[in-house]
Amino acid sequence: MAILETKKLTKAFGALTAVNDVSLAVEAGTLHSIIGPNGAGKTTLFNLLTGTFPPSSGRILYDGRDITGTPASRIAHLGLARSYQRTTVFPAFSLLDNVWTAAFATGNSWSGLMWRRTDRYPEVTERARQALSDVGLSSKSNQLAREISHGEHRQLELAIALAAAPRVLLLDEPAAGLSPDETRKMVALVRALKGRYTIVLIEHKMDIIMSVSDRISVMHFGSLIAEGTPEEIQKNPEVRRAYLGGVAA
Ligand SMILES: Nc1ncnc2c1ncn2[C@@H]1O[C@H](COP(=O)(O)OP(=O)(O)OP(=O)(O)O)[C@@H](O)[C@H]1O
Ligand SMILES: [Mg+2]
Image 1 (spheres, rainbow, N blue to C red):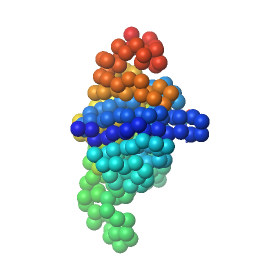
Image 2 (image 1 turned 135 degrees about the vertical axis):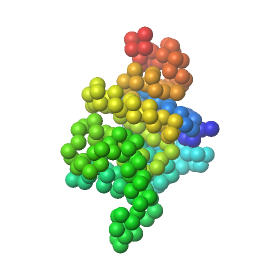
Image 3 (image 1 turned 90 degrees about the vertical axis):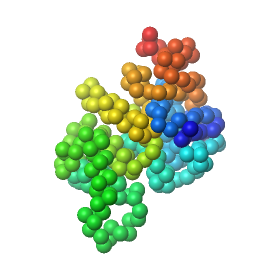
C-alpha cells in the first residue's frame, strides 16, 4: 500500500514550473529514491510534501488521507519527518538535550514543561536516547553539539528527525559534504533504518542510490521521466541521456 502519494503535483515559481504534474506513489516500508540533475525540482518536491509551501495544483495523500495544504508544523505530528533542516540544532546543548527537545516538541503539549521537571518525562527521554542510539551517537550523548564533527552533526540531525517518531523519513542529500569515511557511515545508517521507516531519499551519489533503493523515480525539469527498480533505471535510455551519462555503464 502507498503510504505517501502525490497526484499531478505542480509548483510554479513565476514562469518557472519547478515541479510539474508529478504523480508518485511511495509504498510503505520501502526506500524510494528521487534522482535528477541540479534544479530538477527534487528539493521543491520535499518542500511540498512537508508543507513548507502549498502546491500550485495537485494533491498530496499521506496514509490515504489528503494532506494538501497542511502546514509544516502539523506535518511532523502526522508522522512525516524531514532531516537536515538546519534550524533545530542548539550548539550549546548536549546531544541528548537537542534530541530530547525534538522528542518533546512532537509529543503532547508544551504547557507541561513550565512546571514538570524534565526527568518526569521518562517516555520522552527514552525516545531521545533510542534516537541517539539508532544513529550511533549514544556514547556522545552528553557532549555539546558544538564539539562534534561534521559527520556526527549530520547523524545528530537524523536523530532529531527520528525523535519525532515518524513513519516516513525524507532525506535530502544526507551524504552531501561528507568525507568518504563519513559517507560510508551515513550509508550504513540509512541501510539500518531501511525497513523500520519508509524512506524517501534524494541523493546525487549514484553508487549509494543504486545500492540502497527499492525504487527510483527520476525527475528532469520538474517532471518525472522514469520510475523503476535500480536495474530498470540504469538501463533506461532516456534516464541515461538526461542524467546518468557514463555513470551507469
Ligand atoms: N522558493 C523558490 N523560489 C523560486 N524558485 C525556486 C524556489 N525554490 C526552488 N526554486 C527553483 O526551482 C527549481 C528547482 O529547484 P530545486 O531546489 O527543487 O532543485 P533540486 O532538484 O533540489 O536541485 P539540486 O540537485 O541542485 O539540489 C530551480 O530552478 C530553483 O531555482
Ligand atoms: Mg535539492
